[in-house]
Length: 131
Ligand code: SF4
Image (tube, rainbow, N blue to C red; front, side, top):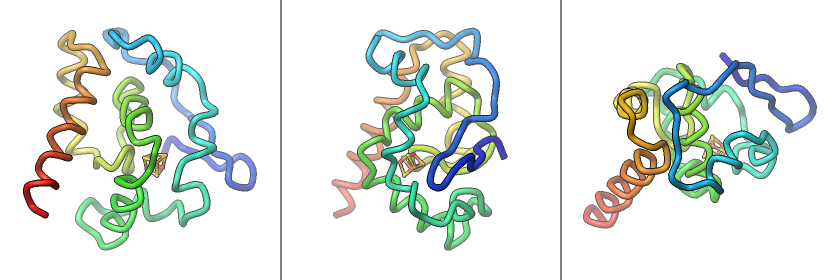
């Protein structure tokens, strides 16, 4: 696990550097990802942290994903997980196996914001079609 509780409701990233290939066309998103304060306002801060690190197909993971999909920080959260090659847990509503192709796309040179927006746009479109 690379997200650690350092104070009540405050998490700190425990991983090192962004992927060397992580580039952005959206400087605002780049600045957000570089910072660490965004997560203080995440919809998960007062939830059970374990739900975000359960097995991919578990009920706990579905609960976590539902919270993420309503979280206003979904975009920066997912971008951060991809840029820092986060291996574990649900970030931005996506599981590690869902993020893997996104990390490959970023490692191949696609900008982080483009990859994230495509992923979230596609998911939103699918949800709209299903409703
Ligand atoms: S998108 Fe999910 S993991 Fe990220 S801050 Fe929001 S609730 Fe937490």
